[in-house]
Length: 221
Image (tube, rainbow, N blue to C red; front, side, top):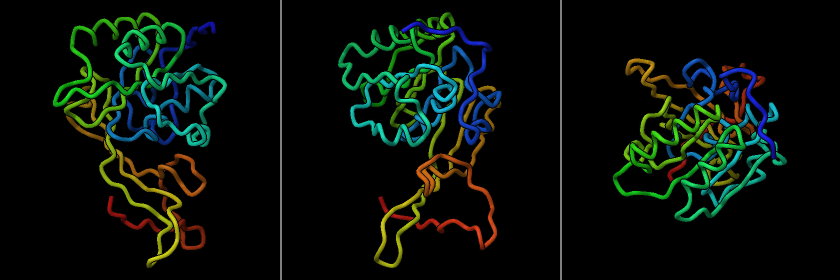
């Protein structure tokens, strides 16, 4: 693989996610955290992947490849490292040299960030040098990557497709909240299909009755 240089320092992401990111796009050299949603994290990779950039996913052994393709990722330019073990940080550092966006799920450290400040600073310098982007998939704010450009969290989730004791889950609406230091403490949020009935990520828009989608129904768990 030979890594192509970026034309600009901004990488357009999925249109439905642009409003949740500072500048409306992924910043080359940036770090982004996503709490508890692999689908949302993959959505951030969709734009660069569709534009022809190489992407990598590290430490997510249960990743659904069909789901990734359904979200618009190019599987021919997707590197998977399901089990990096204790070498996950060296693996991520090496991938930063050759791919544009790296999604990593670091090992859990109870009550602590997945990486120390010193190691995070060294990797951040490498990301800036190589103009790559890191997306960290974590388990919540207490385990979030330190010093991120934005942190995205699913705060509400409702499924569609279940009737009164019958049917099957076909789509999910979520509310995604985004926090960034550049917004001076003001969080942003947006309602999304994650995924929609066609298994794609898109913004929820108001529709008339004739074109209405199935109404979501809250499902426990």
